[in-house]
Length: 114
Image (cartoon, rainbow, N blue to C red; front, side, top):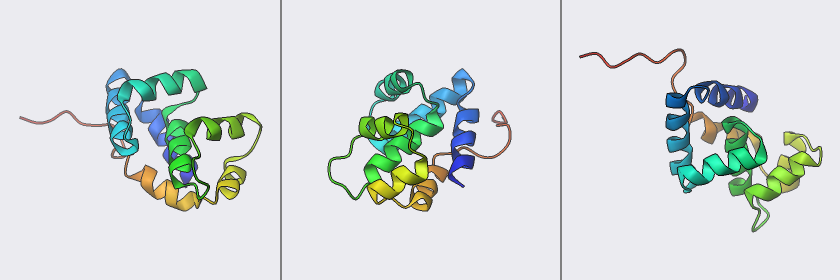
C-alpha cells in the first residue's frame, strides 16, 4: 500500500505544475518550507514519494528526536523500509494512511470548467 502512495506521489510530481502542488501539500503536512523540501529531495536523491516516507517515518517514530536525515541514512545503509519501520517503532500502515491524504485524485487532472 505504501509503495502505491510513493509511486503516485512520484508520478504526480513529474511535471512542474504537479511538483508545485505536491510540494505545497507536503510542506503543509510536515510543517516545513517548500524550499526546504526541494533542497532535501535534491540532497537525498529521492523522489517526493520517498521524501514523504522519510518525513512520515521520522514524525511517527517512537524513538525521540529521530530526524528525516537519520531515516535517509538508515535507508542508505541498505535497510528496507519495513526494517526501518520496525527499528523506529513505526506502523507502516499509519504512515501510508497519512500519505494517502497527500496524494492527488486518480487519473489526469482536468482543467477547471468555466
